[in-house]
Amino acid sequence: MAKKVFVIGLGLIGGSLAKNIKMGHPDAEITGYDISEKNIKLSKLLGIIDESADSLQEGSLEADLIIIAVPVTAAEKVLDALSSLPLKPGVLVTDAASTKSTIVKRAEKLSANGITFIGGHPMAGSHKSGAGAAKDNLFENAFYLLTPGMGIEDRHVEKLKGWLIGTRANFLVVSPETHDLLTGVISHFPHIVAAGLVQQAEGYSKENNLVARLAAGGFRDITRVASSSPDMWRDILLHNKDVLLALMEDWLDMMNEVKGFMEAEDSTEIHRFFKNAKSFRDELPQSAKGAIPAFYDLYINIPDFAGVISEITGYLANEEISITNIRILETREEIYGVLVISFQTDDDREKAAACIGRLTDYETILA
Image (tube, rainbow, N blue to C red; front, side, top):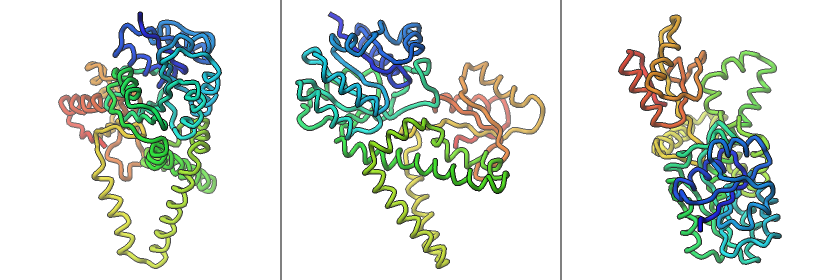
């Protein structure tokens, strides 16, 4: 008998996981549930799911695997609902939310009913959303953190990895608390800083409208994550509050220290501050996927004449290289090109650079 999988939430993450389940387990029967009728219809049309459920109860009672792919606050409500249902003995339940301590704590109601819950966080994403954005390779080579709670046996963790083999992800097993610290440092807190920088720029733009115009270059790139969903980040900040408050105190201490260097005109310490940051950043892996989805940008120095952009895009179209965004930079301080083209994958970016290098004499930089 075919194993049954129930995916709750058919957006980018849920849809991609459903596709990966099908890749790793072709005989699995996948049922989906989403509050968006559009996502349900699109998931059926694209073959992401086999059937849809009209309710959590309808989809979950016979499931062998339940994947909760909704934001953290909604995931808590789903866990509460599942804990009141007579789920199938041996069913495995997991989620894909960005914080884990509160989720695993909430799932204790399931554990009390003899149901195994293992927290999960596939650390990959996209600028697109919805079922139509689901991709077979979204999680390939990305880190996928699994956070089993106390008392979860290793065999259950291995069983979940088996279900998720089609993701081709790199699995790491950590405690929920460790997960929240790691993601707080390299994902959650940087989003706060980016949003703060943008709001500071907005404040100064009211006094001088050149601020917004000049911010269209490097500033816009380093604050890209500030364009993320406000609803999602509100929930993340509230659910990872303790970690983020501690990180914020550390950050304020560091900024006050730098402020002191500047007030004292201590050139040695100012130089050390930037040198240490440069050294650590230069040692970071360049090709591996991390907690914040990468932006695969190709910078191209192009001459200023009519038709040059259509020339470039024409070359890429002929080689069937898909682009996700294209823009011209006016402010290029610390930026190595005039035209910026964004791609879905690093492989597409490298193919594009090779194509342009072969067909033109325009300089390309993979920055």
